[in-house]
Length: 326
Image (cartoon, one colour):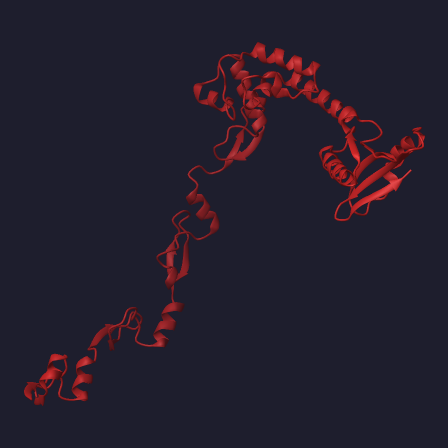
């Protein structure tokens, strides 16, 4: 046993050597231990009433009671607007955050260049903007093209003319014009085939320099699509033709496609016993057969041998094939 002094009251008491090695024996009793571990009280001043009060140290202590806290929150402060100079009231929590009296003053302070009425440089139409010089993109392109023809365009505006594709030095305006006239004579071919060396078609340059020739090409292209490719989309029809071909080949038919000839029948299937002449269509679930009246008349008028069967196969979305014999 060893005699030791209490660290709080200074009283002497005996403990075992083993307990001292473990870190025990600092206080003579539990009461001294509790009193030593208690946090000391600190003086605070209430921010609302100015009263002094003692509390244990803790973050965020500002008021002496809940009443002072609630009253301080309801208290309002007067602030001057930084834009218009109007005096307005704000809560205590908003005192260091709010700077403007309204949303209009907030937007005025944010925009360096406020909106005003200006006239367009090309058409001289009035419009409401802050920094723009033209009322629309069309006016901007027309104004630039006039300056470009007269060699009056500055270097800062030349950059906007060449965007979206890589300009090549070999291609002059006369060469582009020749290739456009060739495309008008052959509307069945794509336009990019007449511009070798370009990975992407320079449509902006063509529209600005040769708008009349480009319009002629588009009109002829539409006529070609209506006459030779039909009014409706043909890609969906090709998918349904492939489905029908697979189904017939599984039934040991020899199938030949004739869809690109734009005749009466799309598929011709031959077997040991019979020959099938099939017209293939694709439509939605609830559409009737009234839209195929003209084609059905043409198929009925067509004179075929006795071994041939004339049919229409319609692929209904989410349902499957509807097979009609004629």
